[in-house]
Image 1 (cartoon, rainbow, N blue to C red):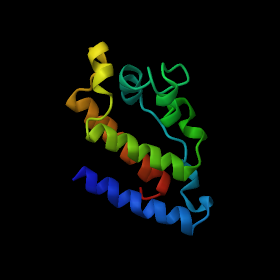
Image 2: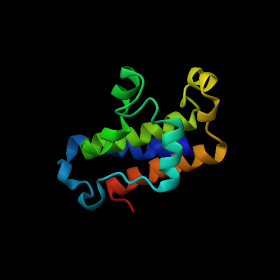
Image 3: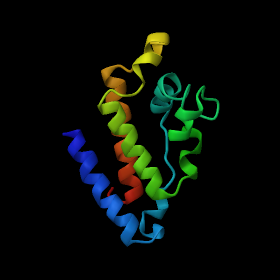
Image 4: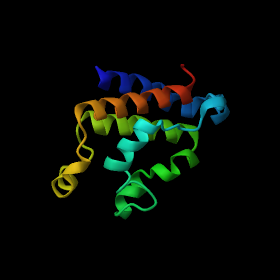
Length: 129
């Protein structure tokens, strides 16, 4: 179900990126906000690789939470939807990283919260909420 939601949001966004100027996106809510509970989970499970202080160049080149708000709205929405997708498909955090750092594993509730957060932030940027 969530995969269909991701696809349902992604397809129009891609089409919008070709059809509309960036200013057509909801200009009042373009910054991604991270509530304390979300930030705590990100700090534990995502930021060790996906931040300016992250351990791998490849990881932070794909997604750097410290630079997320520097992206244009279309790319920002794309990254948020990718976050939701990767967590939904249990691709992140990577299993190799979890083996070395079991404390970084996401509980079901944490994964659900991050997915909901990423999807809602994407919707905010697009202006559907």
